[in-house]
Length: 309
Length: 196
Image 1 (spheres, one colour):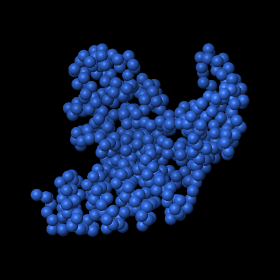
Image 2: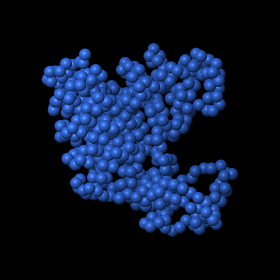
Image 3: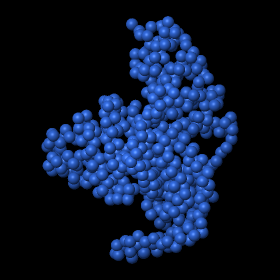
């Protein structure tokens, strides 16, 4: 491989889109050519630079979009499929051309599948589940095959995890509802769900358990939107020692300036001498102009120096 | 991009939603909506426009789900709808001028993009090496790409889709998607040559 060919292949190499042989040839060339190794290094830098401008929608934006969509769908009403649409779909046969040699094999496979399928699939799987015309389990909505094992007489034993949906409704003060919301507030897979749950819980922050969950979210949630919601719920407890301790920690360690801004506003509403050291430490490490200004003003109100000597 | 782990579950959800089960539809939306919103946000760089694309995409899915016949994956079908809407929006934008993300408020000038999170902003210490100037330059290059180049780059670089899948979504060949990606990276390299 020559250098100009290698240069052209570099971006595709980084995306893992080169064919095996092309990749081999490029790697051999890179082993021998320091110029192309430098080019590859530059290409990697370019990749990282492009990574840095990626935007991720905030969980609040996602929650808003979901809510808006729910409204739009409710407004649109159920989709009415007309008789003619049904008829047209029923009559529209779709052929997927396959090589001629495969067609008899496919036909045989279908006959065999139908024969063995009818003999082996039970009419009911568990209680309340049934097989629909497409061979899928209608209920539950989600299922996962956990384990398969061949057993005697050519049968197979399959262990399936099933997730059934249930709709629960109740007041926020109901213990069972609150427990579910507390669990949802920690669901690591869905920041939108966490925002919505914390948003609902924050109105019940007089409960110790809820307050503990809000403090946990404020200190540990990876998503700034969730942390801000939790902070909202803790506003009435800025004088509570546990809350102040968590707020101080967040002020010094949270990487989101929006969160730190809200925290400092909350903390300095109730100034006390214990804060001086924290604010002085903050002045040493804080880059954000607004937070520095608030911090400086609070220190000056408490007749404390801005820096430690 | 994270693909759904269990195809069977997705197919069951689609069938249930096709029969009018709204909870199944909502579940289906939640499987993909974060990716769709992120795709639209990165392509259009405007939270409002991204939300418009999100709404329009899923409303179209809702209204046309009964026509989905499993001829392709649901993922491809959904992305086809979303990327077509994004491409239309990008093409319209090329006609009028690129919108400024900054707006005047009573508190002064506010950049609407400050309300969205930048990925890996905190996790990747390497990011600190890149100055704001470099980021603005990259943003400028991305804006100068053609809508198709921009979409292919977005789907490959940020969404992690394979070129073959991108070709399917855009109704073109893998080779054409590869050429698009190549042109996009070439333009970026040419524009950022002094920076990296």
